[in-house]
Image 1 (spheres, each protein chain N blue to C red):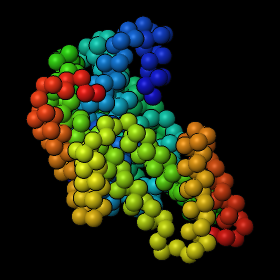
Image 2 (cartoon, helix red, strand yellow; image 1 turned 135 degrees about the vertical axis):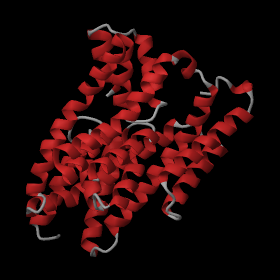
Image 3 (cartoon, rainbow over the protein chains, first blue to last red; image 1 turned 60 degrees about the vertical axis):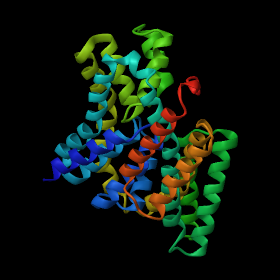
Length: 182
Length: 160
C-alpha cells in the first residue's frame, strides 16, 4: 500500500540521516530514485524549489513526493514519517540530556558521521554533474559550465544568498532559451 | 534556521538561556533528522514537556507542509511550459553550485586527520562506484568513528 510505503521510506530517511542542509540529500536521492518516485532532473529541480521556500529540505521533499504519489493522505504519511524519528529520539534524549551531550559513544559516532556526510554529498555532486553534462550538445554544456562557475564564485567570494543564485540561474536559462541556444 | 530560533526563544520569549541554546544546537546536530525539527522538539520539551514537544514539532513543519502541498499542484501545471523549462535548465546548474558550496562548507568544519579523510574517500567511492546503500555507509562510518574514538583512550577528551 502506497501510504504505508511512503511512511516507512521517509521514516527510515528521518531515522538514519544526520546534519543539516544537504546532509540528508544522498539518502533521500537514493531512496527516491530506487522507488521511481522522481527522476534525477526532478530531484535537482526540487532542490531549487526547496531553497526558495521556508522549511527543512527533508520535510519539503517528503511533503512534495507524498502529495505527488497519493495526494493529501500521501503528503501527511510521508511528512509524518520523516518527522517521527526526530520526535521520538529527542524525547528520549531530552530526559538524559546532560549524559548524552558529553557521551563518548555519541561523540565517537559523530566523528565518523561528519566526514561520511561530506563523502556522500560528494557522490551526489558527481551524479548530478554527470546528468547535467552527459548526453547534451556542446552549447548546453558550455552554458551549464558558465552558470555553474559563476554561481560558485558568487557563493564563495560574494557570499550571495542561495535564492539569488537560483534567480540568476533562472534568468540566465530563460535568456539563453529565448536567444534560441537551448 | 538556528539564529532565528535563538532570537525567538531566547531574546523574545525568554524560554531558554543563551547557554541552553548551545545545548539545543549540539543535541539537534547529533541526533537523526532535520536540525530545525530536532531543535523545535527539544525546545518544546524543555519548556512544556511532551505536549510542548508535540506542539513545537507540529508548528515547525506546518508552514512548509502547507506551502509545498499547494506548490506541488501549481508546479505540475507549469512544468511543461517552455519558459519554465528554460528557467529550470539554468537553475539546475545553480543548484549544483549550491550543493558544491554546502559540501565545501561542511568539509571546512570537520577535523582533518587520516581517519576522516579515509571515511570521506570511502563514502564517496562506495556510493559512486559500487552503488552501496547509503544506510550501510552511514552505519559503517558511525562504527568506525566509535572504534577510533574509544581506542584512542581518554586522553583526547577535549578533542573538539
